[in-house]
Image (cartoon, rainbow, N blue to C red; front, side, top):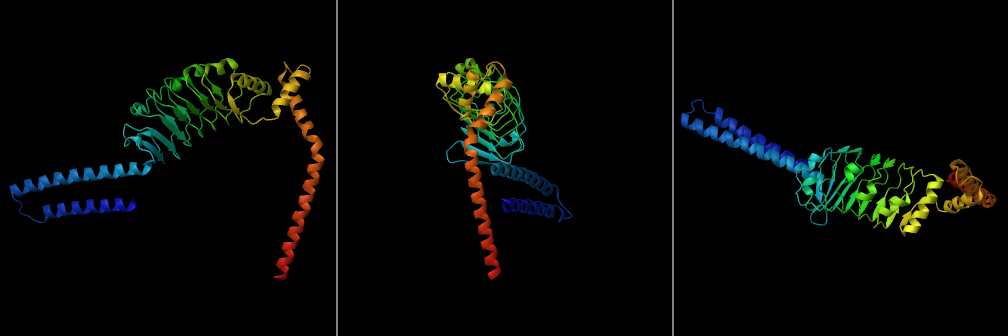
Length: 314
């Protein structure tokens, strides 16, 4: 692309120099020839404008590339959503990544409303989403905002996405989900909120509002033990599949809630009970693990000595 730009620049310079020569080369320019020169200069300016437009268009083409399917684009290296101006209004799928877009303004994608079904903005340092940023996208089925810096799922920008089936916001800094969120997405099937900073439980009442929810990913959030127990129970009752990272902890939480005095009302007592039982559950295998570690250490030391001996022989 750099060679192409240089070729265009050289052509511009040659064209302008040629015009200058034709004007200055004849000291006695008649009135008629002056008009001809003036017309030619106007043509030259128009030519320059067209060339500049070509360069700008080529730059946009470098940022956004058509993917395998018609109507699906991937854009990288953006610093502003204004750089999407060269895309047609008929975009079906749009992926923005490896860019620096900290803010999504109101109506940012409204011109794609008639066709857009998938929008992915990932790894773009996104922090703020303005009210009605996704307004009019009533055909959108997938919204992926993963690997950004969003701190809350707010109804102000979720509103209007009535056909959304997948919302993916993993690896952000989300600490809050607006209560109204659960009634605004009646067709949601997948919710990925893993690797965030959520503490407040998602209640069974709110989960029931997501009537078509099939899978929820909730791993690596600082949920309390009590919250985890309630959510596990609610998800099981609702027949929703979920992916989390507390495995055997579920059983220990249930055991503490039943057998540890006051654990059913005091979060601190519950936490200490689960932590204690977690340690107790691995205590019987600790001696065997220590023996394995010693054995491996001796083997590594033997291999290191063999390597040293080989170096000495060389």
